[in-house]
Image 1 (cartoon, rainbow, N blue to C red):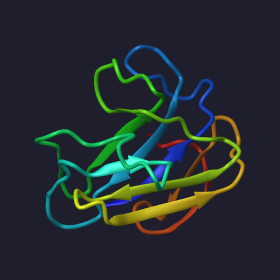
Image 2 (cartoon, one colour; image 1 turned 45 degrees about the vertical axis):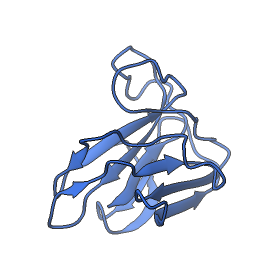
Image 3 (tube, rainbow, N blue to C red; image 1 turned 180 degrees about the vertical axis):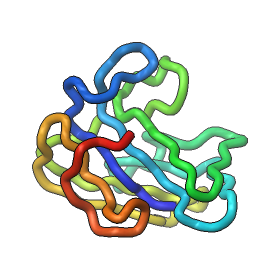
Length: 133
């Protein structure tokens, strides 16, 4: 499982279920088997892996995506993390339930309504692209 794409400055691209244009991170299972990601975490703070923890029963199938809204809107339905992505640059971390880092990405300044994603999808290097949420 990898961090596949993110959008750190979302003004008009994709709205969440409440109509808010927030940051988001797309995770992708590029493996051949389903993964139970209960307890896996996503964060922008290496000292705090509690900013987003996948709930019990969360399964990601092979070639499936899961999007986490990085918006601090914890009361909203779905996957909403207790952090926002800095458009000026930072590092994102994905861990397993044992808090071992599975993937991380350090990036610089981002452009509004352009995402930063792997090309080719799921395996390649990151580049600026039109969002494929």
